[in-house]
Image (cartoon, rainbow, N blue to C red; front, top):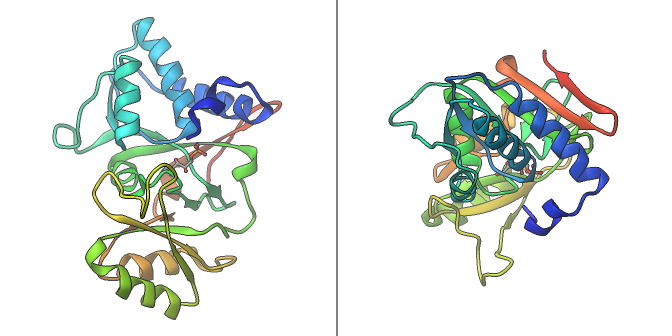
Length: 236
Ligand code: 5RP
C-alpha cells in the first residue's frame, strides 16, 4: 500500500473508499471478522473504526503485521484464529477478479494468512475498485515459498510454462521476506484458462506454502466493486 496515496483524493481512491465503506456497513454487531490487507481494506477499517466509536462491537483477526498495526491505531479490537477458528465474515482486497468471482491476491505478500482467514470465514467480502474486474485472470500469480525449496519450485513453475520472478524489496536489498519468514515468487502464466487446475497444481508443489489464486471461495463471496457512480455487489 502506498501510504501517501491514501491521503490524496483521486478517482481511484474514491472508488476504493466507496467499496471499503460499503463493506464495513455489512458488518453486524457482535461479529468476529477477518481483516485483510491492502489499500482498499484500509478504507473498510477506517469506516469500521468510526462505527466502533458509535457503539459497534466487533473483533478482528488481522492478516498481516501492517493490518495489525493499523487496527491498533484505529482502536479495532483484535483476536486470533486460536480463539476464533471460525469467523462470521472476512473483508479483503484483490488484484484481479473474474466473472466467476475467482481471484488473484498477494500483491501485499499476505496471501497465506489471507487464505487462512478466507477459509475460516462464513462469508468473504472482497473490496475492489472497478479496474480490478477482468474477463480472464492474467496477472502474475504470487506463491509464498519456503527459502529451502526456492530452486525446485522455480523449475516446477517453468515446467508448467510459467515465468517465475523472485520478488525483491523496495527499501530493502534482496528478496522480500513475508510476515511468515518466506519468499514470494511472482509467476506469470499469461491468461489463465483453468484457474482451479493451476491453483491445485501450484499448491501441491513441495515448498509452496500458498498460492495467490483464490478459487475455492466463490460460493460464499460477495465482490463489492467501487465505481465512480457508487458501489455494485457481485455474487454468483
Ligand atoms: C495483499 C492482497 C491485497 O488485498 C491485494 O493486493 C489488493 O490490494 P489493494 O487493495 O491495495 O489494491 O492480496 O496480499
